[in-house]
Length: 555
Image 1 (cartoon, rainbow, N blue to C red):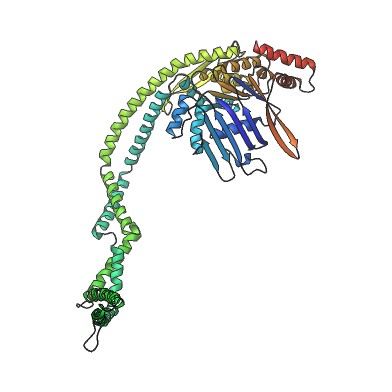
Image 2: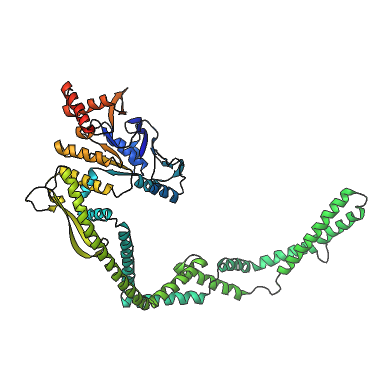
């Protein structure tokens, strides 16, 4: 459950710390006091999208921290899957810092991301508000309620996976069943490309090597002249000594006196190394001096080869590797097209087999949905009768459809709230107050199925008043006996049933607006309920009535 919520610099809340209790927690306050900011803060640590506009004016960043206690096994498994350490006391600390350029998320002091927060948050809290009422008007969402109440999730996932495989096979069949003329044209193009590239016998690195060789041939005479001159300078000619011989002479002279001088010995050793190194260099230069002379045919062959590689690069890729990759892909594509008829036949057989399995699975799912719908409707009617709709009829209207992502069913909730009226679609006849009670009934029925410990109701009582409001309050109180319930409300009836009542107030100080959250004692609760019921100045009679409401709720 949510034990502690700490908010810093979120909108008009500079700093607030709320300790929530088990049972039924109610939040009330004037319109605009900041109740929605509390929910925005909770949404932030649950991984929902936030805006930097939430940051309080004048602050550089906003922070929300939430402490959850007695976390469930499903939350522990989620943490293990995300490699987030578990706390030995089964608590969970979640924080999120919001700044103009980034979000910093932590779970149990471990850095994580918003996606991970959302995954964990889905196991911690479920939030129900006006949006749920609007979604209830969308019949496409109704079938999911049946699947949830009937524990059909695994069967639905199995069917969905099979259905997606069917769509994939269908796409492949469509691709391979293309125009025969188009296939023939594609085969001709690929065959030509493959033949052109294979004949070229491209080798990685040859382009650079050929360009270097061309440069050598184009400067052949200069290269040979420089090599010969360098060799002569090292080995000398008929009329002069070369560097090798002169270094050798110096080496011999110094060697002869090395026994008399350590300096001479050191220099002698260096000259010896230099002599051998110069000899090796001279031999290498000699080996590179060509005796065959310049061959113009080799240069012509290189120019032709480079021209071919250049033309191929314009078609198939800038480098030899790109061209060879193009060749491999072309071969693969040609092979697929050539085998497409055979593959197509195999895919058609596979599609037929999977279609039969999907059809059978969809029929099984349909039967279980209809069986569960009867139980579901009975439970919803029972809840709605308690919520002051004594003559209600509630049913699920199933219609058979072609195989689709939901199977072979479409489902829509029908309701009749009055005697003598036949059930009609919820979207057409339900009033705002009825929608709120229907949604509460659905959530109450589903609450026994899900394992989420904390439920938040944001003005679930919209459009409800009088006796019906008292029933809604009693029902939420009943739900809170098995779960922690947080409820944002304007109804005195709900406030009177609270185990913990928090007042959200705003005030202006030094030209700035501040919102505070106060846990009310009995006197504070009495005053707040009297304020809600009075609409103006509070009288002693209203205070007495408020206290009586609290005592009646306790009774």
